[in-house]
Length: 114
Image (cartoon, rainbow, N blue to C red; front, side, top):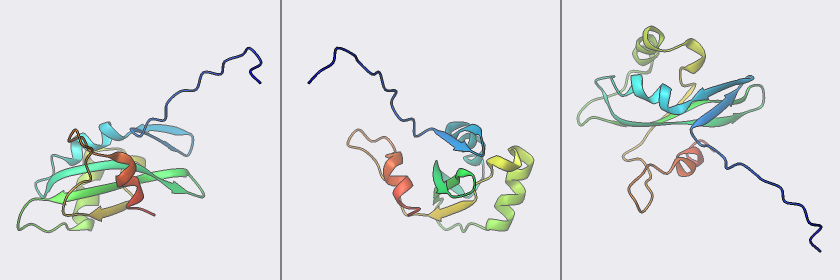
């Protein structure tokens, strides 16, 4: 039975990563990563972590005929973004999952890390 009260719930934002008490913007992390010459596309998501709540994960599509040197990418990232925003887990994929409207489907990207 309805008791006459409404509860307003906010929607979940896949572009906010809650890590160690900080709110990180996935879009803010993606922007400098897209400047890396080997990265064609990327999607940054929160990956469940027992210690931090979430950590930063990235799915990446490489430019044709290029390889990703993870150590070089981490060094490259340290110059451009804060250490705690550097992706801890990286998945190289052929293409990013997309919705019927062509937008990156972040929930499907998150599923790549489970």
